[in-house]
Image (cartoon, rainbow, N blue to C red; front, top):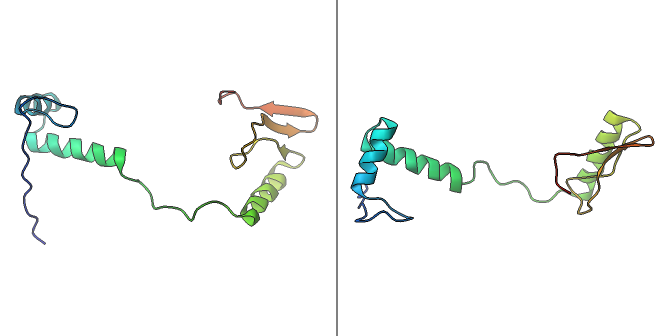
Length: 109
């Protein structure tokens, strides 16, 4: 399928939403690419930033899925019990193994 060309009108002054021809030329020179490739690079970067990179999921987990996750954790970690969860709103602090609680240090309190 043949693509129709797109008209790109460059700005008279640089703004938050557009650039001048001199800025485009400087960008292309800095990147070592043509002006067209500089435009494609900018559009590709915008696509990665603003468009979803994955298909939407099926929504929140069900109670059954939560139970299965808890069961899997118990099977893997034996005596460990979950005291902090990605799925709860509680501000718990770690995983309890016996009488010892292992606390997460990478997350602010």
